[in-house]
Each structure stands twice: as C-alpha cells, then as structure tokens.
Length: 324
Image (cartoon, rainbow, N blue to C red; front, side, top):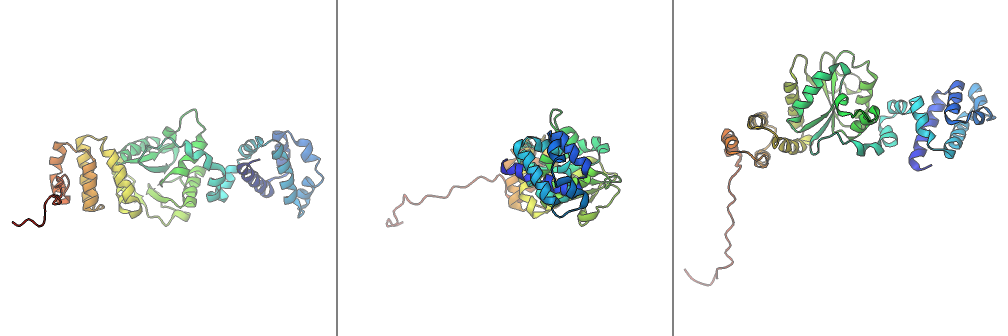
C-alpha cells in the first residue's frame, strides 16, 4: 500500500472500532472475500463481544492483512459503509487530505480567472439558483450549482467534493428544511473546516450552529439579480477579496454589452468599495468604446483614466557646459 491508501485504511480501522458489529464484519468479509479469515481469527469477534482491550489491535491487524493483499478493495469498503461521509462529519479538515485532494485537479467546471463560489441549497431551489448563477457571472463570480455543473457521466459526489475543496467562498441559501438536509449541513461543515468565508443567504431561516456568527444577506422576496449584486457588494467590501473581485470583474466586463458595462462600473463607484487607482485600472482594462467612455466620462475624469502618457524628456543629449 502507498501512503494515501494507508491513510484510508487507518480511517476504516477507526470506523470499525467505533461502529462495527459482528454482522458488519461478516459483510466486510463477503465484500473482500475474506469471511474465513475474519471468522477464523481467534481474537477479533471474541474481543468485540466482550469489549476486550485488545479489540482495536485486532481490528488494525486484520484490516492491514486484508488490504495489504489487495489494496483495490479499500475504496469498495469505503463506499459500501459510507465511511468517507462519516469521516467528513467527524473531521472535515482531515477528510479533505484523505479523500479529496487527488480529485481537486478535476474541478474543471470553474470559469478561469473568476471568483469560485460554491452555492449550498436545497434541490427544490434549482430554477432560482440557475438565475442567480447567471447574474453572478456578470460580476466575474463563477457559482457552482451542483445540478447543472455536474456532467451526467461523472460521479455526483466526487464533483461536489471537488467543488468544496477548490471553492474560494461558500454561499448557503438558508431556508426551512436547510437544517434537516444532510448534504447542506455537510457542505457548511466542510467550509468551516477549510476556514473559507461563508455568506448565509437568509430565505426564511437564520444561520445556526457554528455558522450562526455570520449575519448574511436577507434575500426572501428579492429577484436573483438583486441578490447577486448584494453578494458582489459584500465581497468587494472585504479587503481579502477585493483585489480578486476587481480582477475577475475586469475579465467579465470584456464579455458584456455597453449597457451592462456601464451599469456595473457605476455600481462599483456608487458603493465606494474601490480606490480611484483601482477604478482607473479597471476602466483601462475594460476595452471601453468611445460610447462607453462618454457614458462614464465623469468617473473617468475623476480617476484620471485614459490620460495619454507624457514621455519624460531626455536631456542626456545636451552638454551642460554650453551657455544659453
């Protein structure tokens, strides 16, 4: 076994010590073809039944023997008992290193250069989430919405894990039923474990538990475009995200028509979330047409954008000893 496989076997051992009964051991034996080895072990099932101190040693010994012979059985056992989900709930920060890291490179659903926002939501919200995704894209924010971002040929859970492992921020649509959703609770727990920022979108329910400290944005009754603007404003106000948001917006502006470009630049100016230098750089990188420059002339004049660069005179050709 390599080091990654040994980490997984260690987690399987922890799960077996905490949760297995005799029936589970027999099931594992059937999955791995090792029923005789398990039932024939002098101490394993006996120490389980009597709660003997050496049970954990017996578990480690039998599992190491099984998986050393055939490490391809590791993932089969993990999947059958949902051991990865159990470990994600117990240790979300360690779970990433054991089960997800190798899959992060497959997170090809993000738009290159955009802020990566994972949206945790109930499946009943699909149509509204699609509209929110489109509106966020205008700001250079790529939203991961599971139902439309996952290719049918791929394993759904793997893609969700890849999104969680590579996201910059998580937005949680907190509404009645969110707390009872195992998936939503795990997604928030994962974000807390990774210490990424969480934006609760309050839609009839307040944030709870460990992410109750985040005030969030009330969105009930608001259209997706307004919600997207409020998310963008919140991110632009955070110093840790501002530079990244400005770069992403600069890329997004290149794809917009004149009306949208002007609208977004005017909102950024209205929010007072960028310095004049930052606005100047944003305007000059946006490839504004003469028409667009005319619509934004007041902002352009204030920040000094599009001013011709005056070359510094070169006096080296003159002899300082020649009098006037």
